[in-house]
Image 1 (cartoon, rainbow, N blue to C red):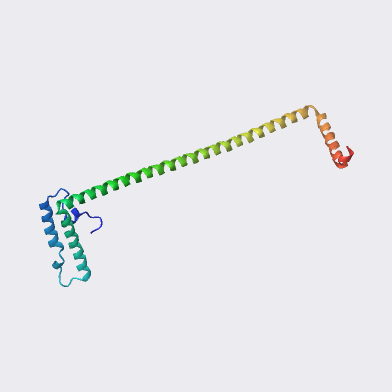
Image 2 (image 1 turned 180 degrees about the vertical axis):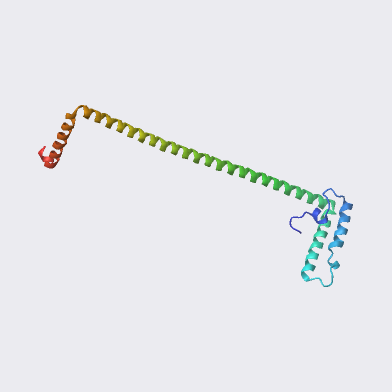
Length: 173
């Protein structure tokens, strides 16, 4: 049997063809495809191909020419189409589920990236505020030192005492 062709296509008829139409189509196709119509110089391969085509035409007529077998064949074709349709629907459903899953993962990833970006922005803001406060505090101390020069002298004395204590060691406290 030729792959992909229905028996109706082998005989070249419509699905609603009558039994008489099937018989006429068979006679025409049988005359076209009969291996005896080949020239005597035909190769073995050409003979086998012609025999296969003729066998397909005979098989198609055998099934489509008998109303019971034709009804069974039509039912098998109908079920196969339904199964294909059901399978296509299932495949489409799986594809939609995969797309939804991929979209959800993408959204989660984007949300994590946005949260991470906000976190880094917050850290930058905190660092900027800290630097600004440190600068402000330093400016404040510089103004105080400028107004009270004795503070600087006291600071130096305190640092000298601290250094001396460190040099003497922990036992001289």
